[in-house]
Image (cartoon, rainbow, N blue to C red; front, side, top):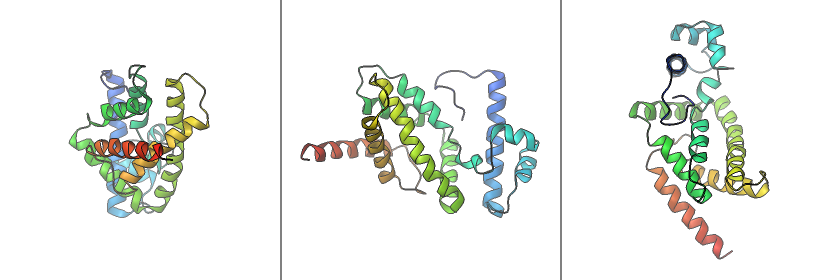
Length: 199
């Protein structure tokens, strides 16, 4: 996948870059699965992907990033921004997420499941993913504040943190995320709202 907004066709150069990025990531995942994360070098990944090490580093800053770089976050942000302004913020976020993930092919879902399995089994990747989860709260908080026409503040982070917390509860680390999980998130949001009414 690329970070282009859904529905926007890619030019020839962008398609070539997307294929190269996908080839590097696929080579990395295959080598990590076959010989282990620690035993795999950038040079081996580059050779397997039929690119030079310098080309590798144009796409991924580190070996970790072949697995941890999330190509979907920028797409989700743009999909949320594309929601009509009268749509409530949580519904806009869920619609944006659905708009991206429901268009993934089975091959893309399979790749995502492999990625999550590797993250769960490699401590270095698992630790960095925890940092990414914190960053995701900030990313969502910025979008929430933007839709509400105010600077990002603690309130926006609280709302973003609640949503990220629900996603983690629905799909804990290593379990992966599945298309039907969006329905579970909506049910969980309703349960949270009902619980807070009695707070």
